[in-house]
Image (cartoon, rainbow, N blue to C red; front, side, top):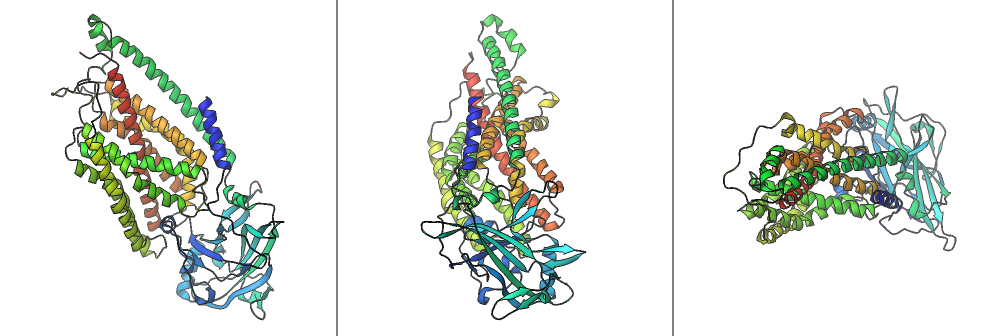
Length: 617
């Protein structure tokens, strides 16, 4: 109970502890602040586009692309300059960006398509993303969503939001008279060209509120304008992200997490008590005098298979590769979530989370190769080089194969989500120069190491496995075993899916780390229980079974992703649907390798312990 309270306290602390990821920028009054565009996104298509994929006004007709990390590129971000002129603490009533823009039929059709599919434009200023304020209809509660709507649909007509009202906030240091940006809200409006009176220079005034319709059957003259309002705020620079990170109902999140923790710990305690009591009785009977041995063996059967329980699995090379891939994923996730929990991979560090995960995965190849190589030697593997190559290529091959396939479709849509060829070469070079050599190096040392010691010898002639009851077959076992681990993480899945597919910010890494620990405990205990019952049924083919059964929660993750697709998303086109289920396939494979590896090592440790505790003639 103390450990539960400690973990909950740790989660709360890590939720509050926040490292923004970069040093603050100080401005003097009147200093120019760059407004940059990141991308356009839609939860209905899952296809991001760069800002100038539409014919927006350009800053002196020059487009400047800013450097990005690997994670930003993979997420479809293409950061560019915009012509909006923002000066610290200088209000602008109305300013013209450009008034001579005429959209032809092709551009108008594209704009209408994106407006109909609810696209959002994402801008950043001083590394702070813009947000739009809205009111919940049921509770009248004020909420914020990232980005602003490209336009809206009314009476089956599309309108473009071509006037942006920048509501900016600053925090002023009384000692130095320097300013820091702490708020970036945008209120989008649609104004017809006739509603704007253009004055000398770039000034203008709004004389009407007629919206700017986009007609797809002809040319559309459009004027782009903006206004700026500054307001002093008590919010300090370190807390300026709070408005973005309070977009979800944290009370529901807290309640769901605590409920999952209590249920999982309660069920885990019951399972542990049953296993320990049953095992003590079994071991006591097996260690009785010789005259009582036959009677005790008839009651339970796991000692009967002691001569076959450590018989190497079929296709041992693939098994070692699967377990090695699982170790690499486990270490990558554990380290990434831990650093994110400490605030080092916060949302302010754009793309840092995905970039860090890729780098950690590459460098964890050394440890994965070592343990996979030692396991391969233990299960009588002879060709360690081919096993090492399979370990290095198995999971990356699946991810790259699926990614390369869907990339053609994304390219066809001219989306910024398509991975550039140079980025592909960079990722491939990282794998070839870092992950592959480290896995081979790990295999070299692991295979030279002494194999794991087994407490009993393996017979030369395999024992016949008796017929099993229906519920001990792999499919029922997998479905039964997957419920408990999935119950530990399904609430967190909703928030993760929302972050990925609905462009929300995910920041509760303290909770996620706690759920990760509980998931590992649940998979371990479920795997031990299922393998114990399998051995009691005198079925000693547990190697692959322990991996498959403990990974059964991935089946429920796949089912939940289908449920989420039909209930939460409004995707109705082929390419976005293909994109969603391709990502889901990669996620399910990753989850299965992770949970299956955890379950295998738990079962392997358990079996070595129980057979070492009984006397074998």
